[in-house]
Structure formats: structure tokens, C-alpha cells
Image (tube, rainbow, N blue to C red; front, side, top):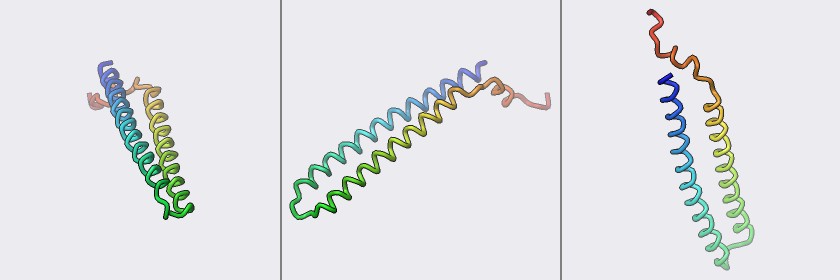
Length: 96
């Protein structure tokens, strides 16, 4: 039973670390996107096609980031739902 609680704590810790890192990366990426969008709109010599492609790239980054977050959340959910009833057996010596 001790291995189960240790494993559960490890999963919760890693999920917390991921959530914090994801939040920070999201904030930085959103900030960079806002700055680049502001700069791009102020540049008069940049063609509209280039401005559009820059915005599409930023949208693709945000979509990929959201997909990554969803995949990680699904993984943590599956790991949380996983039964660790045989977890203790993995650490026992099979010869005994």
C-alpha cells in the first residue's frame, strides 16, 4: 500500500510540475505573439500576405500547444485511473 501512495504522490507531483511549466510557457508564447502582432501591424512595408502567414503560424503554435496539453491531460487521467493493485508485486522478489 505504501508503494501505491508514493506512486500517487509522484503522479500528482509530475502533473503539478507540468501544469506550472505549461502555464509559464503559454504566458511567454502569448506575450511573444502579442508583441509580434503589434510590431507586424505597425510595419507599413510588410505585405498583407506576410502578415497573414505570420498570424497563421502563431495560430498553428497555439493549436499545437492546446493539442499537447490535451494529450498530457489524457495521459495523466489514464495514469490516475490505472489500478496499481499489482504494483507491489513488481517490487517483490519472485524467487521468494
